[in-house]
Image 1 (spheres, rainbow, N blue to C red):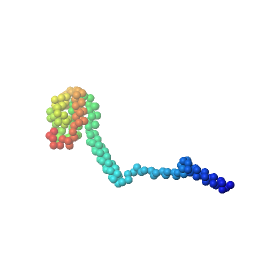
Image 2 (cartoon, helix red, strand yellow):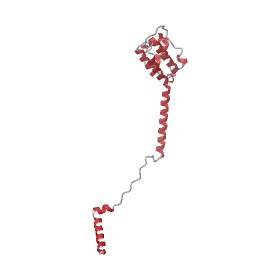
Image 3 (cartoon, rainbow, N blue to C red):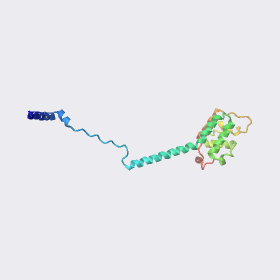
Length: 176
């Protein structure tokens, strides 16, 4: 009987091996592939990443220096909001801002029409907004005994000059 049982088991396993389920059961498990590293495999990528980091650091340094260099503009804009429409105070604020931007030797002696011409030259527009426009009151406002009211046009003009006047290095070689 043991021979018959062995033969039956052998025949059953052969029949099972011939069937589709039997063949599938005999398949080996597929091994898991190794995880793919996200790190660059060559030196070129590391060099490129280093160069990109240096460029970003240089750009950040330049932005920071520009931000620091324009601190006087931000302070002048805050002070402009506090002068509350007095033309003499606006003229003094513009003079302090110009002294900071262009230096004492270039700005301190300017007054009257020469001061307005300087502001017109450095505002960057073709029309003389200070000499013929809203800024003409600045020439005499500091010398009048009563306060000279500054309209919104003068405040807007002063704000535009503070925001957009070129730096001293941009004016090198120009007669201002």
